[in-house]
Length: 553
Image 1 (cartoon, one colour):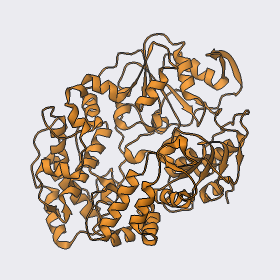
Image 2: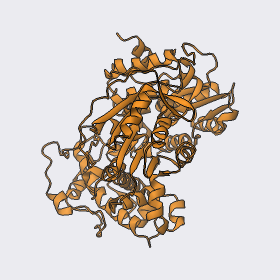
Image 3: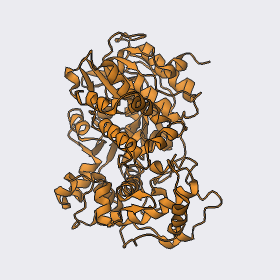
Image 4: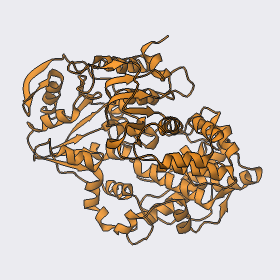
């Protein structure tokens, strides 16, 4: 793990109460006097920061105590139909709750037709509705299902119409990176042993943490704790975080200045719009994929006077690392129900999903397979897709299949190539601005960090780099396609597989189980998401975690 030199540590101490550059006033500003006076005790950690620097901040406007799972409803079909098809009893019950006029939370498990359920409810609701989707493609697809009384939008499209359109489009099209940030801040080449580009990347991470939260002001909570975890000493981590905070503040002030030239992301104008406390003049709001909503969106929707209908699957929450708040688990709403009948896969795959959730999370879930689909769990000679937990396993799967099959990688390989180029830089004594490796001084630091619990995600990458020439790895990745339709085999991380499905799926061997020190609830969620991408055949022969789920000891 990276250490800060004694000389640098001495310099860092003064940044607990001062900064290299002063921060000008901004819409969301840091109370510097409060920060400098704040005492954190012997650990020198703020109260909301755990030992591994993960932040858990309750930022939403409603009561966010952990809620119990909704009660089961009898299965079967009802007399109510939508587009000629009868709803299940569970779906019918969900529609009845929507008609109550009160807020509703619908727990919809993998493949259970949640969008159809929302559309069925919207077809009988009166007044004007708003369906909020997480990307434009889903919003456009939803327009085909929902009645004309429901506006299908992304949050970003709403914010763009209100305020984003006032920014010059070039600022949204230009790439924001650590070097650009450092230039706008006029930083020296090195600060406390870190290059100005590395400091710039920390600033970007801090801005991202702020814009994803519901917070009104930038604070120590928005420091880039995820990247700082590679610094071994807790005091040094906190000191560097305090040093970076004024830079985060200054960059935010530049970003919200519509006359400035610094590039911005779409999240910047979304945050600025949310800070204006907009009123969405709708009778009801349908909030899809609520388990992956960040604090900003939950607060924005929660403040509305409209009826609020949240739908999602608490066990598909896999994005807490980028600010997601699991609304299905935290929202305490009286009217709650579940939809457990899957229309994607048969009972055998449903059994695996139930085993993962019950044996790894002690969840009382009974997902029902679709009787019209015959599913199997066992070895598959030629899977349509291989799903991996980490980039290291993804690269390994590519190398094992690239010479025999036409391979496509979901989302492409540009990020992987960037990661390998960063590893090469570190091996050759150069620093890198690649996010995963940005704060390491050399490759040996990466190797050491990979042997710790916090750095175990890098272990497979380290083995690959030690075993293969990096240029050969990059050459292999460049030969991979992104056209999944023409591929013999699709290889994807579990995160990028979400929302997709294949007839036959094989799970890689890098998923985690409860007997491993680094296991967390979200690791079980990730395995559940991966397993439920399969329709007909699920291969877990190489996946120890899935095997332990179905045969607990």
